[in-house]
Amino acid sequence: MRMRPRWLVAIAGSAVLLLVPPFLKGYGLYLLSYWLVFVIATMGLNLTVGYAGQASLGQAAFLGIGAYCVAIVMKAGLSFWLGLPLSGVLCFVVGLALGFPALRVQAIYLAFATLGFNVAVWLVMRNEEWLTGGTSGINDVGRPGLFGLSLEGNLAYYYLILAVASLLAALLWGLLRSPWGKAFTALRDNPIRAESLGVHVQAYTLLAFAIGASYAGVAGALFASLVQFVEPTPFHVGASFTMYLMVVVGGSGTFFGPVLGAVIGVLLPEWLRFAQGWYLVAFGVAVILLMLWLPEGLLGIPDRLRARSEARDAARDAAAHPEPP
Amino acid sequence: MTAPVLKVTGLTKSYGAIRAVDGVSFDVMPGEIFGVIGPNGSGKTTMFNSVLGQIKPDAGTIELHGHDITRLSPLELNRRGVGRTFQSLQVFGKMTVRDNLLVAAQEHRGTMAGRMFAPPDNGLGARVDELLDLFRIRNVAHRRAGSLSYGQQKLVDIAMAFMSDPDLVLLDEPCAGVNPALIARIGSLLEGLNRARRRSFIVIEHNMDFVQQLCHRVMVMVEGRVLAIGTPAEIRTNKQVLDAYLGN
Image 1 (spheres, rainbow over the protein chains, first blue to last red):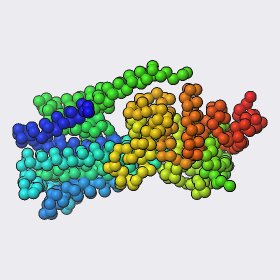
Image 2 (image 1 turned 135 degrees about the vertical axis):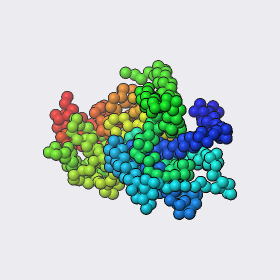
Image 3 (image 1 turned 90 degrees about the vertical axis):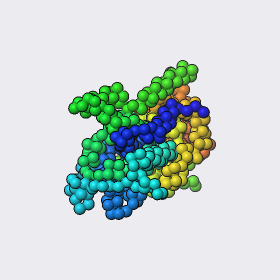
Image 4 (image 1 turned 90 degrees about the horizontal axis):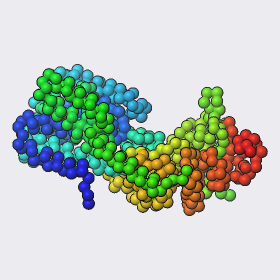
């Protein structure tokens, strides 16, 4: 059996993620963990935006809901292992509710509706001090243990995030290959045709939002224990735009798109820090150039090559079996 | 006496002051291929979309196997065994041909929860293979539908409508933009499917040769109304139809 190149890269990448971190210092480990958190959140957003075609600018709100959920649960003396799934479930329910506007409006109007949701959630985080601690946030969010093992250390916690990311990636892979995955894609490409074929457009739209949101919820829970301090700033609408950018730059509707997109969105600004005060300008220019050359994202390159090869096949077919005029 | 598969009575739909469909009544019998012809703007597609739940009619009733389906959505109609094709190509361009066929029938199998982690073909592999062979598109099964020629996409589009083995299929201009060789192939495919499974089809078409060879009965629509219903031979010699539509 011939293995596709992108899977070879994925296997090599997984080996690096498993074997290299013990040799990294604190900041490197933190950055890699931070990147993985965003890979999880953008995997969910990629399902909503890339596969199901629903414009969503509210992903940072779900990241925040997940983070606050685990922080509040742990402050109440309960376990992280209760908070983690609770974050996912809570975001699933809220995401389901947020999906309802998508049944009435699409495209830019839906984007604005979800953006409004993000602003509303952010204001709750900032103003409802009794629950969220307001601008002071919630300090000293702990890290969990597992079967007597402490995950307090940066390396151990990194491996927890890696394990959760791998599990969620495997679940998403299974989901996308299942009939649900095809229904999501059909919904994105042509909802009228999809409905005429028996695809329950409303149900799949709501599920695309809910599942995408639950991924961000889990990512938020991991984020809270990673930074150990939760306050509203990281969950502002700007973060939703950045996550949307990660999905598009990586390759919207491609399985590995969020992995690459999060590299651009999270790691590239750090790598550009040598430019000091200009690093964000350099980042902006890099993104503009990427979008100009590769509007379909980085993983659009293999797709372009595939389309070219398909066009060659089609031309060969047409030459071999010409259609009569 | 055999009951009709579809019975449409007094169907009416207006857009402002324009009455696009005006009191249209007809029925389609089991195993019948029923043609609908008429000049552009005669209300064929509006009638079609009203029957298919895409448009809500202002008046009239539509019955499928004796059950009122007048207000049902396209989704509910599909679940009750009504398939359709559209006037323009409506394949899912980024999916492979095989996936296009799979998605066309997968929702008819099992529960929604059960489909969540079901195998990719959801037990429909044999049915897909059957239609790939029947429509002679197996050689492009793993190509993205959007990369195919127009004619091949047309075949995929029609095959999708038959994937769930519907009782009634409505085909909106299956020959539009298609070369004569492919028109003949589509005609014989539809004839074969009709004979093999005794399914009923409604076909909107401008190609008169195609309609006359394929259809058992033909309805002529002009200005939203039914001008005549009859066998192709009757329609061909109907003076009103000749005056209003067919000419010489």
